[in-house]
Length: 336
Image 1 (cartoon, rainbow, N blue to C red):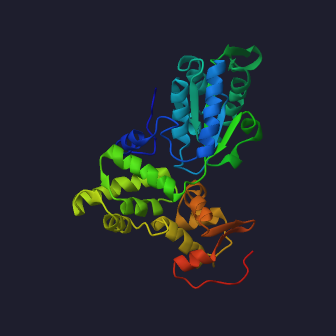
Image 2: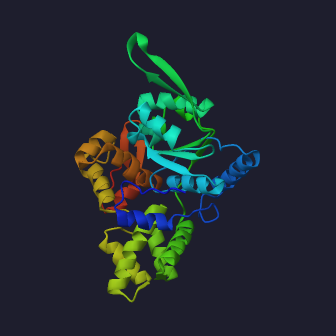
Image 3: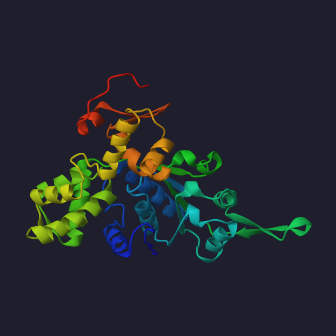
């Protein structure tokens, strides 16, 4: 099976991340109902000797969308081709993958599918419905359209912003999965598994401390584990204890609610520059000198889930919990 590295990670982090990725549904921790359903869909497809129906995974970053796509390919015993929406700029890019790199039953995984070019999106519709690809040749009166039969593949799309998907594209996915944040007990099991793979000794209290500050996100938990391991090797005896975990997390400026420096700047900006809100995401992006996607896809989901901010029709508003966390006087006036 083909595995590619996350384009946002350097080679060391990519090797680390993929070495820790579960390869089967049994190894995948959490999301029990989703796993139960996927087992049924996969077994049914194998029993009928058909390709699995097209799947759409949507969730904030780091919750397992890419991992599940690779697991599905592994469970089906097929190859997987990985690409992303921004990479497929022309229908010809899609044609190259469909006609030369995939066979019947294979998985075609498209990350950030909400960022597909309009022309590519329209070209993918007949592939998803009838496994046909239409390509135009020539220009003007002499132009013709060729129909190419494609392999009977499974297209898996992943997105952090399902609301940006067009209705025609969303409706063509037979299996739609919304991954939720993990609870602390699930994150603890993930950290225990990762620590075992990394051959690092970790005490239960040390694992609990990491889990508590991991924002319910496996990717963050594994990244923190690696950094805490460094502190354990340098400042301890190679064992992740509660004291080592607290020391490492404090040094990384990750507080006891799992908020990092950027999260706190985000909350403080709303409190001080926008009087607690409401404020739009565009204004926050300008005030923080951050990309809008970083605000909406990376920072906000956990803050909303944890009750630090609320989204209202007029914009983002800080909650009382946010003021208390930052030791700022709570503003009682009605803001929405």
